[in-house]
Image 1: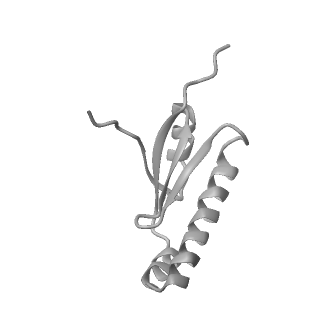
Image 2: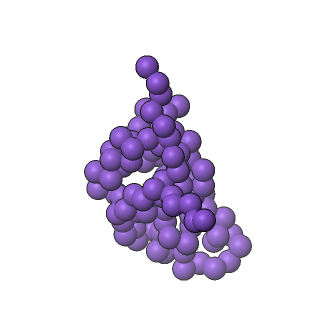
Length: 95
């Protein structure tokens, strides 16, 4: 049986007061703390909802509290149903 095709999706999170507080700190240390917080938060969500070794997180996006991940359409639907997630959109290549 063929493995389902994975594509890059962007996942944007719902309002998080901790994210908003950390984002307000524009110092170098504040930026590092925000990056670490988001990376852990996004990794934890993926581990909670998806099977290990079935996805590949590409990056966390601090400016919008989101991340890019290689997943299948079925996995995108699972993420869409999570209460922590606002939007899941497939990456669109521009010609």
